[in-house]
Amino acid sequence: MRALLMKIEQAAVLDRIGDRLQRSVQRRISGERVRDLLHGVWLGHPLHPVLIQVPMGAWLSAAVLDVLPGQRRAATTLVGVGTVAALPAAVAGANDWASLSRDQRRVGLVHAVANTVGVACYAGSLLARLRGQHRTGRTLGFLGLAAAGAGGFLGGHLAYKQAAGVNQAAPDLHRISAGWHPVVDFAGLPESTMVSRRVDDVPVLVYRHGEDVTVLLAHCAHQNGPLDEGTVISSNGHACVVCPWHGSAFRLTDGTVAHGPAATDQQVLRSRVVAGVVQAQLP
Image (tube, rainbow, N blue to C red; front, side, top):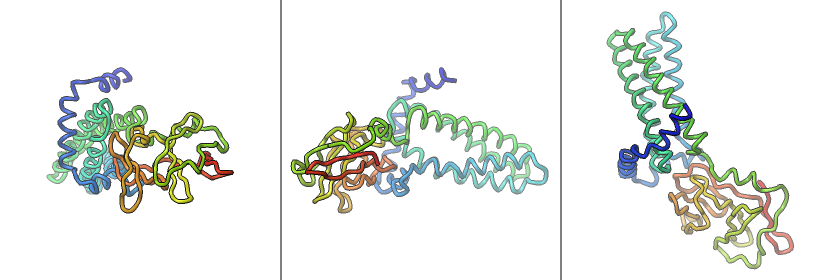
């Protein structure tokens, strides 16, 4: 299984399809507000893994009912609920997939194919059940569950092995020792301008707004991009840093994600000014 997954990650032949699909998804989901909605910016958490709970839960429940007597109607209802609920989950997943790196998109493409087969099987299962062909409906349902299970396995590989959709800046926190660390002289901080510094060799951004100072991790939560090379914009009245890699935007005053593809906030360290020196420590 490890060898198979590695082959998928390295299958450059998938890029011919993946690159075209990426451009197509980006064209079709072009509005920033829609993309942010689908990324889960408003939720502070990726939306796709939340949405997939409904179809998988419904389909698993239907499979249990299919082996029990007298549960045809309930199983049919659950198959229908799961099939309908899979559509918004797929749209959110496609939106996330389009902002991944190439090796991640390769696995994501196979993940999407497996789930598409699963949805197709369940759509056929629902149609068969509504026609009274419950044996065929059950068979297609179990096939769909197997395909969706394979897709879920690949989705787990994307998240846990390839770190797709996770806060990739979080490991930097484990590299910072406990206690307060001197960062920069407060008097030397320009107003409303990013300054790049290090805390225990971890790159951070220091931003002064009035008498307050914010210290953020400098690696983007989305794909570890260098925020210290990003640009500063104003979004809804807030100064935000935009990642130069994929365009995620974070408020410089508190790290709140303003625009995706990042769905989680940028980590902020605790800070204070002592004897004219800005100090920072773990949150």
